Image (cartoon, rainbow, N blue to C red):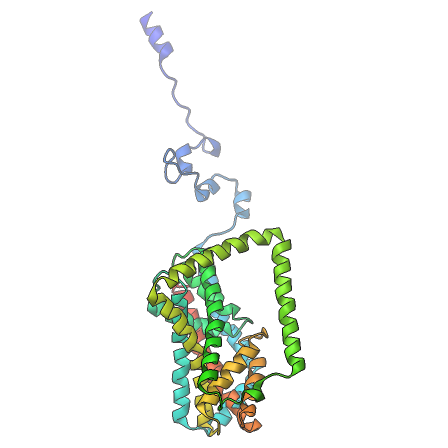
Length: 374
């Protein structure tokens, strides 16, 4: 019976899957790349084998939704700009009217120093990371970050834009965050060194006694500083979930700080840009004052900005608006400027440093989002 034995050991034919039974489909159809190469099932192909009701519950990943989200992110800065303009329109109008009678040459000098502020900030950003960043994209990002920084207090908007830029350049989140911390720590230290240099170089011109706070104000500032430090120390020592990430972030920041300062070019960009930024801002104020005929020397106006920005930095206002303006008017009046002319100078300074670059900065921010740089 040889034929019967051969028929008994022949392999059975594989069953043909029914069209209505998705479970018996080929297993390799679920994998991308094919099974056996270490890859898992592809979600999009798995969804094809689910019933129609379950597929309807899955989130859609169509390119149309991605384009809509990108379009919304592009328009968001313009919407915020329109809202802010509607709220603070009186200040812009008064500043433009008063600046119409100013000397145009000094105003153009103020515009030049305003542009240099973005260059100085870009130098600090580059000096805070060991990797080399593309100069053009870095400058454009910093210009856009200047517009975003006026929307939220504490310069949070600018930090968010720069953090997104660093992440898109492939820098890990921990190191990108540590670079922001280094940027924020170096700027006040450099400004303090510049103030000390002014005090040493011009001791008789600055009228320090008129700028020193009274006893009650000094005691209030000291109390607020002490309470803030005590709260931070208590929070770190008592809340364990915060201790580990803070210590890890501090180690990363110290490592990157050592790497940055081991390279002279990075260290020069970091500290030179941090020292140049407040001087450029003060030069904008001095240019506006000179265009209006303010009888205060450039040294005094530069020092007025340094002192006022340091005093107003403790108040978390968007872009320093409000406390910064009041401090600038106070310091200019302390140096002998009439109150009306000092107020006009501060309004002109705000127009050049905030409102003039705000619209182009917002457009650049939208363009960077569309170009996927951010």
